[in-house]
Length: 260
Image: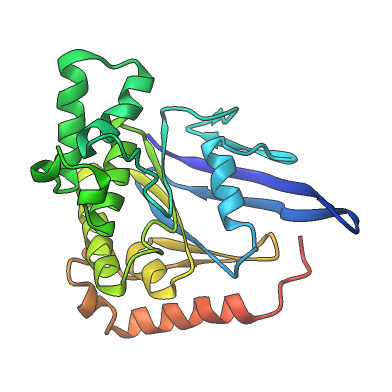
């Protein structure tokens, strides 16, 4: 199971500036559901609230109003039913790749042989068992990000949350990891909710794309490509891809709807 529901989610920040106090409405009654095993992308201009929504789903932020449920249970904080992958891998530099993956499991209370075996399985999922004993500085940027994904997967969450996981990488590495994420989803069937600024990435990977503007859901677009997307270059040459990409682009650039 891994269904995620955002219900009338709102978030207001108070900023203390030299000119005084300013209130910012980051999210305004955001509602949508990610079905079990579905891949959903959140996309929109910078500052539209997509990362804030993701952090509330993870339990790193509290909503001002509304709530989030995972399989019907309201999110009250971080939990092992959700794993988070950040834009930068955020690995501990003094630990090896394997030890970085083990870290989350140790926090969960796993010890001994089970700890090592589960961590190695997670590294195998992302194709990094041969570099298990290297430290982060000995890994490429793409490898570091794959270690971050393995660390999130090691705790066996039902939901994988990803905040622009490939945004800091070069184009070639990013495209390679997009293909690997599709294969990872095929093997694990995890529910995936990810934030991206990249239109091509959103359409290539997602079953549905949630377009956000000014803290609200502007539109939810179904991607009519099926899940057989092994050849992403071929997928991106299809009329369905082009039409869906344009529809999302238009939703990002039109004036936000005044309706709540």
